[in-house]
Image (cartoon, rainbow, N blue to C red; front, side):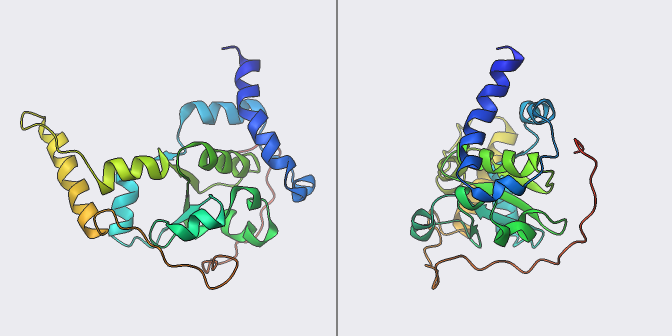
Length: 206
């Protein structure tokens, strides 16, 4: 696939999402298409379900799960302590201090990779750091963490150790149970995040 087709594959869905949000007319892109393409190809935005499970079980205060699905899906079930920022609201000013900050590591997730990765691409192109994607989304979370498959007795030690970790995480998280607490208001509570001083960034910088 040549460079033009790769860029089109990335920015066509991205453009459709941004076009649906009026606020994007005031946003200034910090990364060029070519720079974003390099980051997409590297895949450095992805975090494994094992990494996320470990942080959830340990109650790690340094990260924030962000569910980018629609509010009705979020209210039916979501990962522990996640907040809901639907993809179409990703550029809303209400969430600017959550997405553009250097205090917590944000991890986007959806049912699969698509919507979460689009949320990451939007925020990354605007120059926001500290945002990541849970690889595989809730579908992969269910397969690997909540209902892990037992490896064969002849499997390598690292595979058996991985299974033991996943089984332990599953038990700690309720063995398939997910949070079903519904919000009492129309929007998710925003975490308290210290506002950072806005720094001028050079155009095209990372």
